[in-house]
Image 1 (cartoon, one colour):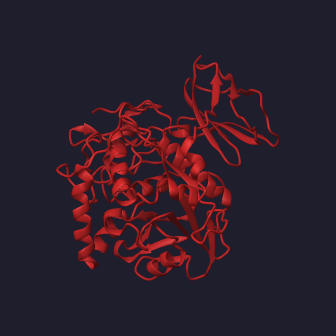
Image 2: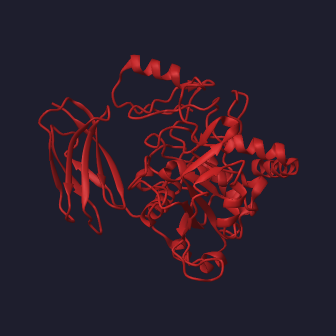
Image 3: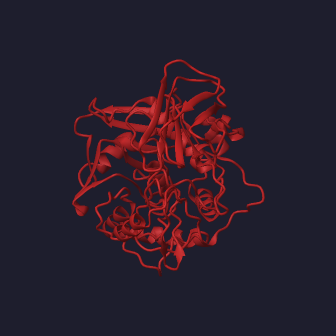
Length: 422
């Protein structure tokens, strides 16, 4: 399968240089995900868990679900924030933003809307739990003030922290938010990780661990929340596209039919988001399970949807049961319909002057920015009062090309493309 290039500006020299450096495993790119390394560590320390994983692995590859009528599955979520009253003590709004991102990314709507022919709405949704394991009201956001806990070290206090925070993993997706994640075996820090459920489902290791700045897309977040989406993919048994090991070759696979073969990690970056050819096919850099920047990722494939739902049916049945949805007060999502809110630049193409239409049900104060394809800010407007009508934008000094219109509110983030012509 060939994936179409999303080329904002065509600079062949930069492209060639980028591909050469991107394929080098020691290219200085951050190792965002620690799942592969920590699964190796887990199996070396617990051979019985390796046997358990291998047995489930066969089922994950052979079982299929009926796709004619796919019911909506709802996963209750709780965030456990370990902090020392520092920047890692993220707000409730950031956590709510991440749940919104999950629903967009797994639901193929909002900022994950796309027309890729192999992409899928997984029919998996997420809800902040409003009832805790003891039946008490909760926001779905737990905070633990402890100076020692912010220095999260896989070899030192992983078990203590995860056990301290974890709610019943058969009924909640536990997300642990920390300042740093140290792991001596790689000589540095990890950004986030989750263990595969075939080895750890419904145990204290079951959940997602992430550094604070990957959560949500507001305030101190440095991405679009898709690093945490990626980890939830692991939590639901998805491998990286190059397979379960980072030192993979073209002979290995993620065991999903509609994701192309590729080898070792690759870091596609915006604004170009170029898909290089690898193993005889173009890499699916837009896949949530790749290492692309958040702006380049936007989809799960149909095959990945089947694999995740197969895993849920085998290992996470209680988690998505109707009884658990009622128990955690997430049943309202079963009939959930996604919002169609978006921004619409018009006319498009434009000649420097255009309007941005807002289809918002509840307007909010906003910041509207226009960037060129190199990421340079060309225009910005900050509005402290809610606005319903179209927003006029005027750029007098511009060159023809593709520009990005980004509108941010306190709780949401919208992006659309506009083409400038002479």
